[in-house]
Length: 258
Image (cartoon, rainbow, N blue to C red; front, top):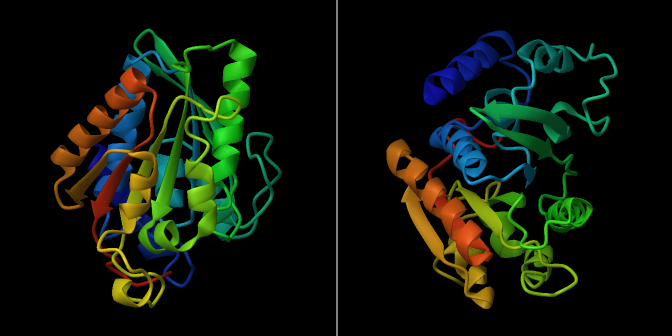
């Protein structure tokens, strides 16, 4: 169901907005579905808040299919006729916008907060850490199990931007720790037009995770069931050990950059 909903959304955008930039998720379709699984498992694990930061690729799919931002509102933004909305956290181009929502899973409710992001792909990382920590402080969540941060990276930005390293160093600092962040890498195996061997020295884009000893799971984007399982493992690991964990989803860009 999650994959079908995502594909229907993609098909409509291709049909109606063929000449617009949308930074689609094609080639990594299982990501959107797996993000839905992550939210479900987090709710079952008594997480009450998820604070998420991600760049533009797949963002519209995530906002609609996971955060349940109304499709009509997204389509209005394509037509640049969007009216001010108090549920949007920043006025910006459509694939930079944030969104707040609450979802219910049985008796468990969970608040989802997609932070607005700038074009500097990883600048949102420390904001995820800070917002999550602020929520934990407000809730007096001393064991850091009720609020969780999720950061979605591109492979080239993850390996190439220093702010990633600086943010990871916050993992265990007493005044900054959030009890572990789940890092998801949308690995297109190309950065804009730059091949990996031209942009990094490591074999994997996730080698930086070894700085803090974080587990790294590499998974094929064409295995959605396996990716769902990886998301479940990541949430359970984070809740038990209160440490960062990385999931590297290896896929590609089916229709190029934008």
